[in-house]
Image (cartoon, rainbow, N blue to C red; front, side, top):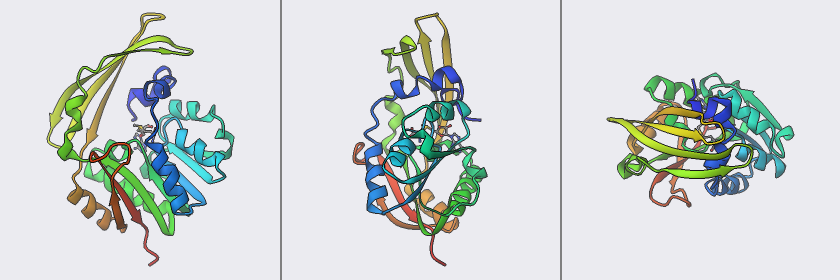
Length: 241
Ligand SMILES: C[S@@+](CC[C@H](N)C(=O)[O-])C[C@H]1O[C@@H](n2cnc3c(N)ncnc32)[C@H](O)[C@@H]1O
């Protein structure tokens, strides 16, 4: 079950305004070019920003997400008509033959248990043609990004929604699991909505062994150019044999 921030329609509709700096996606657009990927699957595509940008650049694009409310936002964007949208969790993806599958926005961290992660990787592998790549990012646990998440209060004026105050509180750190609550106070009608999230932080060794066990080879681990030193960006590949 996706978090309310993705699955609750009123929150999904303001997601892009709250998270409005998408310079993180530039690296993925560049990698689609670098790998000459004609077909791209965006796993956990959310509100579909990357999927639509890739489709407008002439790629054959599929966007998949279990949050229908986020897909509804995605379907309204320029280029959305050229994207095939799948309402599905990663583990239930159909077999495809894409050249590139991506997970942006730290989607890899939503898989909390080993079983969920293994199932997601197995399904992602099945979506790739032999030689196809799975590229994803995940935060380096050593950088303890959650230390900056508490009490960041912002007031935004969002077209269609009006003024919204939003803040995040850290609610728990339990080994590799970090939980937090984000609150959205809509000033137009006084409604206050909350979204509770938990993310799993896997270290590089754990990621390497799980990818290898899933039958994916690791070509490279890069930095995220917009978040230097904070993320692992894994470039993996389904082998030809
Ligand atoms: C932080 S958002 C990132 C969305 C998008 N990739 C982006 O960069 O804007 C995480 C996304 O993961 C999706 N998600 C949650 N559980 C999932 C699952 N089991 N399989 C695939 N996606 C999932 C959520 O619905 C949400 O859209």
